[in-house]
Image 1 (cartoon, rainbow, N blue to C red):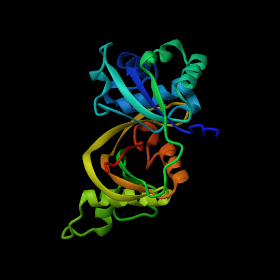
Image 2: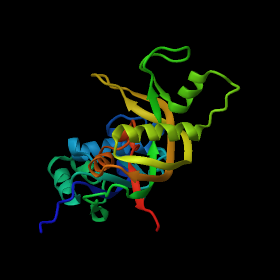
Image 3: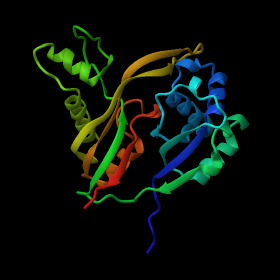
Image 4: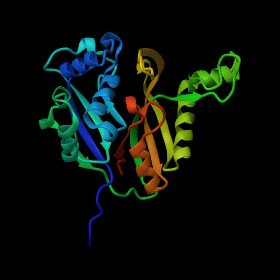
Amino acid sequence: MTQQAPELFMIQMWMKSRRLAELGKMLHLPLRQTSNSYLVHCALYELFQKQAPTPFCLEDHHQYMSDYTNSDRYLPVLCYSAIDKEDLNELAKGFASPSVYHILNWDRLLSKPMPVEYPNGMKLGFELRVCPVVRKASDGKKWEKGQEVDAFLSRVWEVDDENVSIEREEVYNDWLQHMLEKQSGAKLLSSQIKRFSLERMSRRTHGENRKVRIIKRPDVVLTGTLEVQNSEAFKELLKIGIGRHKSFGFGMLKIRRMKN
């Protein structure tokens, strides 16, 4: 019987903080205002171009590169990829510059194949860092059409009644449930906020004279349980991630088996 080839790999990388800072300088980024998540986003693209692994997540993402100039420091990066570590290495060897290539500690690069099937009804624990925002479809008293707004703030503005209690966790749980229903791979069974903050995000404008602008968005880590509804759709969910800003360290669904 022929064994089915894996469609997705989990990759563990270790990025050298000093070389990430050097890349930031090369790209003319203001390092004191540039998060690690954004620098990792830039490094992944420079290393692997259109095959850059996404979504990804990293620890210590609230620190900024001005705090990480010691050459002995590394940032651990976890991501999903359609290709394994050997193919990623070959890509970087062929197309990345030497300074970019050595951002990664290649000796510590690890990969593992993800399961080829998730049975319907399987219950899984999860952890997920997301940016729970909504885009407004029309103008309102406090927002403009097309504006990207924190889902909690959007709910508060829409209700517009200070006597009505609105719980942030409930709003974010509703947002996640909607996202899962939209992508149809899994059903949310439970969810709670593990961590919340407002994240300063660096973004470069488009056009010839690209500038860096800083925006603030909700940065939320949710944990809980879900149930697989459709194996193929669930695999696609892992591959593409959940919510907005997936190329910048959000949206990677980390899963674990539930205890019997």
